[in-house]
Image 1 (cartoon, rainbow, N blue to C red):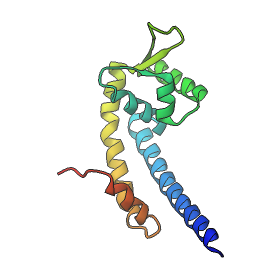
Image 2: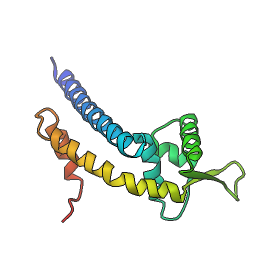
Image 3: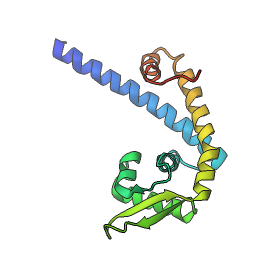
Length: 150
């Protein structure tokens, strides 16, 4: 294998490791959130993104970027959350085509209930993954960028 081939293999191995860690985290978060607050990971991601708006609302296209979903998938997701009275849509006063989303009080309450479950599950899964030699380097890089509570 030549130098170029080695570089490609290193990148491919790094990507496979990252994908494995992501899959592990995603499945554990999905299980914990569904069991405790009846939310999927992507539904939680929407509530989390909207909770960070500090009293403002978010355009649908911003929400699509935050959830890494297509516009049509984002619309279906927003419809489901709106049907559950967790979020609401608001028409933009300046642009009739613009639609904003924001948390309802029920959505904020569910987010406040789900947030510690999400964070505890994530911390647990990362700690477990750090014990696996093949995942430990990626976990270390992820945690190096995180400020640990005092």
